[in-house]
Length: 233
Image 1 (cartoon, rainbow, N blue to C red):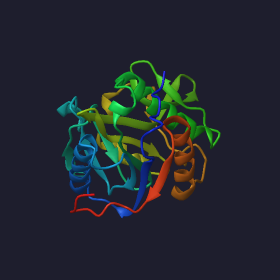
Image 2 (image 1 turned 90 degrees about the vertical axis):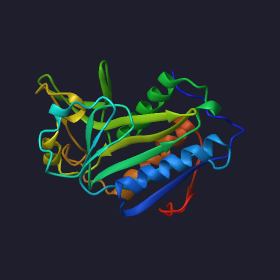
Image 3 (image 1 turned 30 degrees about the vertical axis):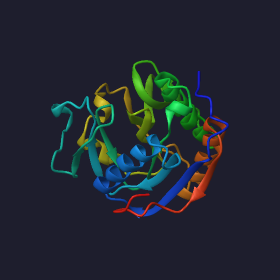
Image 4 (image 1 turned 180 degrees about the vertical axis):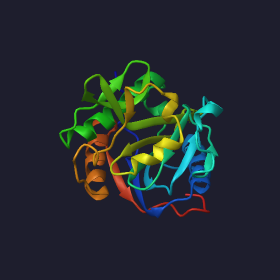
């Protein structure tokens, strides 16, 4: 089950920010943009960026899962899920889509996000997929081990999504050691990246794959300039 694109809606905007985007400014922009989308004042937007190293706590985060509270800045956030890490080499895509135009089906929306990530990974010959009871997209490492390569954490307000997905292209995986990622402490389950799987992929090449997979699931997306933070857009 996936969402059906609204054929009558304007093309989704697709923006890429260079450098590291401060997390509080990113959240403020997303909240404003989501409100404007809901009001019919702005088109849908996919916003690609990187953050400097930080941890975020979702609405289900448990204090004991923050293992190193002084390692990186920690931000409480309104998205679903538990603790996660963002940092250089990880492609974050903030997803601001209007589900009123796409069926108002939250389950189908999450499945569509999963298929987007799976389709992106497949372009690098990486077999990835969802797992029952574990959010995100995973790869089989053999001998009973599975590692997460991409995380999903979204919030809906007036049926418009914000926050989104994070795909590990080439981050420093040791940075995940300051938290129990997504609350999963079972040693059979870890984190991986394209680099960890032996793939040397630039962010530009990854973004091209991400864009192609997006259009196959959600419909057209046209490139626009990066958001000007501190202003409405």
